[in-house]
Image (cartoon, rainbow, N blue to C red; front, side, top):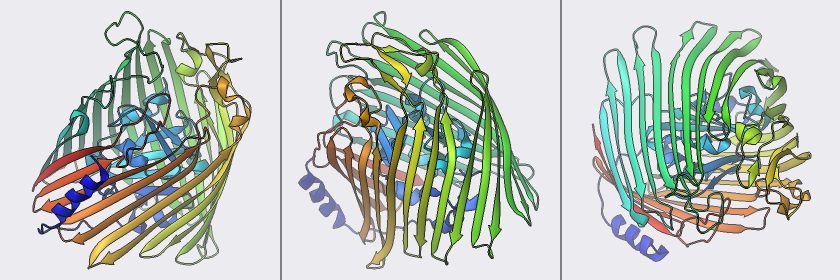
Length: 606
């Protein structure tokens, strides 16, 4: 759909006036950041943390988590198509294996490859907020939190309600979902079932994705036990995801599931949260969709874990400590049958001095791997509350990542693993300032990361066709990040403007870019802005702009927009993506979709 057509539609819908209940904007100061080992209100954290609230999600013009995270400065989502069928997650120039994804605090790392990290992303209908922690402060999570961590916090209560949505649009897109909330005497339940299909915007780019989600709390009147279970089934054409051969019609199927049980014991001074969980990922890849015998990969990875996180409050401050253990099994026709045992111990303590204006949080995490032995990574967080509105902070620490099974053992006609790889290591530093008032919040952060033994698939010369996993030379990454949001009123309606900018520079291009397969596509300049406006009681408009410039020289601008029209319990939506038809590639050889539109309807039964 052309840009003019979209605004014609917006103009027509805006002429109609119906009653609308405005969603209460979430106040960040009252949000408890659960992705930190020591849980603290957002305003009191001495770390670079971004929170995407439920209202942000609604006004994002995004239909999935991959598109939503695209709007956060410093987060680089490199997609290979629509609906998040396959997307890689990067933070501040790191690799797709170097960012840890969590769901309600459960680690969703995949030992096969970081390509599967976003397979675990949930439907946005069940997400309360997303917490993004960047830099060395994420070290307490251990493995894979090399450059940062993202915690998806799910909703806890929908009362007794049912909502159903249906969307259709360009490329034969058809999305449908039902979300049910049930509040019983001694339990509560949230159930979601969703389906997303498309014929595809180019040859062999169709998809058929199904999502299931259940969250229940049992025994609420005594010792409450929380259960979460998710299952996603994705089938999609993978044209040019990994090759440029026009005779290949690549195809992929992934299945990702999770079940976890958590409870919390509270006393005046102690908070103890034990948890058990089981995560599984299945990956089927065909190089020729219609000829499975030509080349076929099948990987099944299971991770079973148990953990206990605790905090103790005393006159000396708050101490966070805990342990998590997990066992990983992988069965693969390419990588072999392998297993790994992991144990992670962590300890940190927050001191408060100078009438609670100064907080100092030293900490250390120690991890044991059955195949890579012990690793320790200490760190320190500092914060100084200048006044009610201004806080200075700094972080310093060590992070690391052990090789995935793909790094170690994968082999095909272009790629060769390396069983002799060493873990990646980094020493990172960060300084920042936060400013918050009732209407405005902003932050500036300067960061630096000195990494060694980074893993990339490289070849010895341009004539060689095989890329081998190798620990490349030391790499320095530095930059700065600016975030700001402003809330104001027009005609007594809430309006909001959010902006973010990240500049990043590294010296990885000092190596020959013709010899590297993955590492040379850093997002050097990343600017995002979202304007959410309301001029009529029942109509809300959102415009999202993203600018990206990569170290390879590619630069592009993408505009998205959405409109929400509320009529009592019914909502009509119109979402336009890539309005000006930008021609760009985020990763590999796959061009992103041209301009497209999606129309939707949601009905809420209360």
